[in-house]
Image (tube, rainbow, N blue to C red; front, side):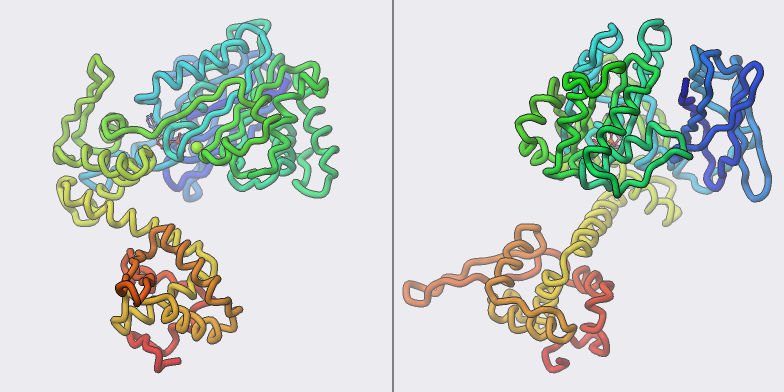
Length: 516
Ligand code: ADP
Ligand code: MG
């Protein structure tokens, strides 16, 4: 039987896992590292025995030195039940000393960090757990669909629930659940998801290339893998499944694998997770019927909830900071590092914008980073305000950077007008300048109408403001555009685009029409 051993350990920056060895009574098994990040890593070890492992050792190398540590049943947090080891290995090393008076452990504020506690999600967790109860009773699993905006705890909740289910099933003789988790972010078709899933089930030397098979065949291969599993159930978690867009065949085929007779020996359940509401609304009727036995909505967090998440995390991240949980679940913070307004302000900014814990944590991290850079003793409200601006700027930059060339050329037209102090400007004046710029870099010159549409899109995306000007009953009305973000940011991003580089050559600060 193939068993995946979850091995959690302290993770030190710069260390590489070089060897993992699992010692069973009579044999050694070599493992492979499947995931690492934050302060932990997960190692997959395949072996063919139901005998519990007695010892698991991990070697890490750092600058030519190799350090080894072992788990044993006297280690804190070790669970040895059936064939699963969950362990926290503290390497036999001194802790790296923090170089700042601000952070005790900044990694806990990073995105990949996996906290021990999920805060403010009791209802969703209850619903999630109860939807998976049939599995533990040996019945076929329900198919679930989790949705909500990014940063609201969907991935984290899922991981926690699955780990718990995995742990609890170890005590049951007649239930054996296999889990397959796949992040579909970079996969844009059902075919690619199916091919990657097949590889999740297969050992490294049997992996397939993710292209080139007829689509019928890829599903047959996937069903064969499921059929072969020595497990009563298989739960397949497809995170960020919205990436597959309209091509949602897999979301019909996989949840129906048992009903349609494609897989008989293993009960298959699918947990689909989506960040995108339109994806849920656009699922075909047959997919809705098969996938959504149960839908769980993760709403955005409000400022209060974000405050509690941040307080708990801050107590691990910063020096001289402690948080205690009150009977009502709320957290109370006491800190020499964080001024009183810091957390409420981070929570308020993130709640107003997105309700995302990811954004709130990023803001707090950035504020701490600024305080550290300035060698300040504490984080102030002022740091948070500046961090918010910086985070916002990064976001705008990213979005601008992703725009197609024609939109960038349109923005370039506005930049020229800005240099001439001629903003806000009518669309025909922007168009004139757009044409010059497009010709200069040998891009297609689109029609006035197309550029008008681009201007509307840029306005919708929040890069431009538009104003209607009325010239009285005879003069009619027209629209004027200007930047709603800072022009120097636009200039910076456009200048960084190699295709547009030529437009900035030799004009230095003087971006006037004469230069063309
Ligand atoms: P999603 O999958 O919905 O985009 P994640 O589960 O990845 O969101 O959460 C985003 C970040 O916010 C992660 O760093 C996670 O640790 C943190 N987070 C989200 N919700 C909570 C929560 N309820 N308690 C603690 N941390 C949370
Ligand atoms: Mg996620």
